Amino acid sequence: MPEIRFDLGQYYSMKAVFEEVLGRDSFAKVKDCGSLKAWQSESVRLLKAISLAITATVHVHDEEWMTEIQGHVQHGISCIEASPEIDELFSTLAATLARITFLQIGFIPIGHRSIDRASLTPNLWKLDLVRSVQYVQNDEQRKTQRQLMTRRNGPQ
View 1 (cartoon, rainbow, N blue to C red):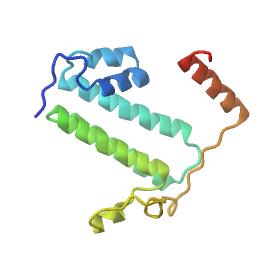
View 2: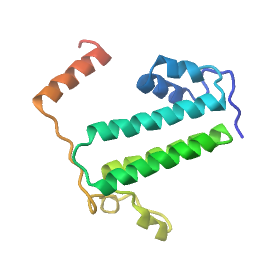
View 3: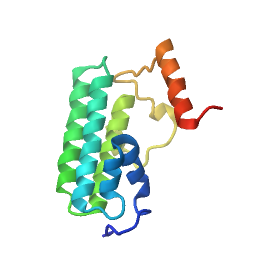
View 4: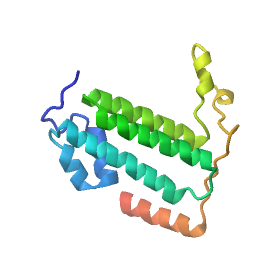
């Protein structure tokens, strides 16, 4: 069982995500040591932000998809809040985010449970049998993207 230490480098990649997505206060709560309670709080906040972003951003969807997304988010929140150790929290968070990612692409390929090892070949991972995903970008969005990239990377 890993212990949360007074060490900025421990779990730094997740600390950086909290700061990038949720702000400096979120990073400060877990920065050096952060209790399990603080990690639970910020992880729950992250899942709530993802849920809110999906609801506010994905305008065209079937209701079953949204119900599935929200179900995974709520299950993840419940399990994170009940996590007795930091490793259990990270396991739950990773599993929740993996499920959301597959749902964002099309569906969770649960049929792979019946095979020994899923091969990493494109035909097995084409996930548009249930629903299709389409990302589009209009001129205004393209302009905003360029501005954000310039702000992030500096002028080139």
